[in-house]
Image 1 (cartoon, each protein chain N blue to C red):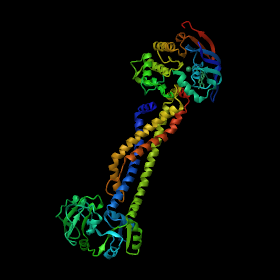
Image 2: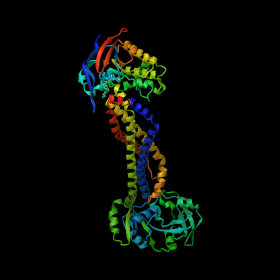
Image 3: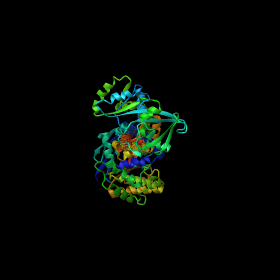
Image 4: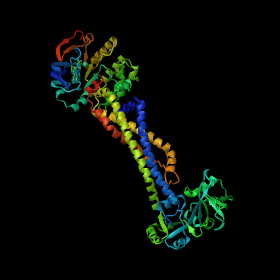
Length: 393
Length: 232
Ligand SMILES: Nc1ncnc2c1ncn2[C@@H]1O[C@H](COP(=O)(O)OP(=O)(O)O)[C@@H](O)[C@H]1O
Ligand SMILES: [Mg+2]
């Protein structure tokens, strides 16, 4: 313990150098903590997103499954259309607990976000609410009629456009005015940004009679899923996507990005180790005489080894603490960039830093110190006292 | 008085790539417990070499050297640190106190290396030794804030910390002015008398040398003569 204090005082000898080395370790730790935090956070956010869709299986028209998976998460279905009669057939299945048809269409709005953008419209039926029982109205109510010229707006879409129940909205390109019958509360899913209208109305005004983009299904018993999927393989025009598959697909998409960031973190760690070894070795050589004197007044090899080891552990431990703080503070910016870069980013916190993760990174930093301290500490401990003392002459 | 150091045909040879130097050529002498002995001789005579051998800092090339009951010629190198921290205290010409530690911490330092728990109240002991050497007003000063004479006092205090039986001082006054040199020398004498410690001082200052009990005159690795001093 007393040697620890001596080690600490020694860090103050060359302040700039100590600070720079600690900074190097801190950056490596910060990158690593953010990365691991992101891994955990993304999983959680993705699971939450997928679970909040309310269904375990989505039936869509045949097409690229990746595209379908992403589009679906962004709003409920791939933009290929299937015949409504498929729904009429599937709905008979005994194994189904809940089922809801959807028709999604996007409309280009030249005024949106300044430079123009797509607005997503989704035709739904009342069964939508049974699959998403947590959905509540912030104001207004359900469509007055299943063929009404009305919309219900997701929380964020309503915020963005400053809509209230009773307002009229105009759909560009179609020349149609609809009345806002209600606004949903925030759900924390992609549905918050969608404008919903009755399925029949959607089919009518978008000129997509008898068409659907997807069917969301919840089974009574999840274990029947493989058999259920098997049976639907016979339908030539559709494909079945299970949410488990979707999760896997999306995790695949981001794994490339993860490999990249992992290698960056790995390089940062290697650089940090070299930095620490270099700093400590330099400080050992500068103190050759002092180490010789310590040995002359009784320090054993082990004492000297421990002293130098403590110094590296201190540098790395401090770096670990500073790095963790940086990671926590930078979490929001990391999130911002990640959301820009990734093909699909779920709602909610993407970087999830837990106390366990912080503890792990601190332990990791100390292990880093233990490893990088070995060589300098060995060099110091094996110095011969008289030669070390004479080295100053 | 009992004998604490006995050298018989003690020899030290340095082998470098270029040459072989015989720094001590089979010397014989004894030192009694509590004695204050000066080792005098010109530069290169072998004074440092002799102190290093007695202090367990270097290996012996031939003959025998018994220090405080240890037969140093036969002792394994890995046992040397233990003898250094318990039986001898070093004082160097260049002081060699740790610049990042305060006076008290520097004095306390050797006790950190003691095994089996060290000294109980090491801090208090360090402070009392500093008082003994007249530095009670410099306890928390860093070396950079001390004068040369004060630094050497800290070094003397440090050599006393583990209560060794022998103090080895290698030209302790070499970096000090006349007045401070005399003070340090007197301090070493006092310490020796008060604690019945054996002190060996290497110096080439004749005036100081004659304040010792005995002088061992060393020249080219050979003892010229051993002189008994009046003052003693
Ligand atoms: N480590 C060493 N390697 C080689 N030669 C040495 C070494 N130490 C001392 N010497 C030589 O041994 C002789 C005695 O040196 P030293 O004991 O330092 O003398 P003093 O302390 O009396 O000036 C000198 O010739 C010196 O050059
Ligand atoms: Mg010398």
